[in-house]
Amino acid sequence: MNVGDQVVFLDDEPELGLREGTPATVTASCKPDYIEFRLADGRVFTTLESSLRPAPTA
Image 1 (spheres, rainbow, N blue to C red):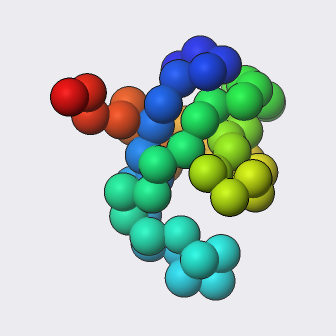
Image 2 (image 1 turned 30 degrees about the vertical axis):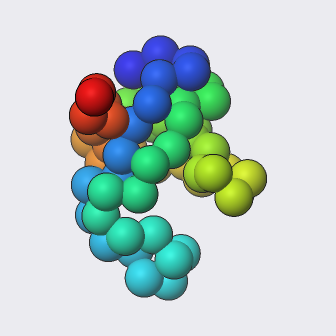
């Protein structure tokens, strides 16, 4: 995944308020296999790359 890619979150994370399918934008590649992403509300998280997939295209 590259900076600027549109992605969706694959798992529910209730404690973070994230549901499966939550859209996000990749903002950085971090340590090996980790991706930083930003949600539409401005929150930024880091997760394993395997927790995200490319967003569907129309």
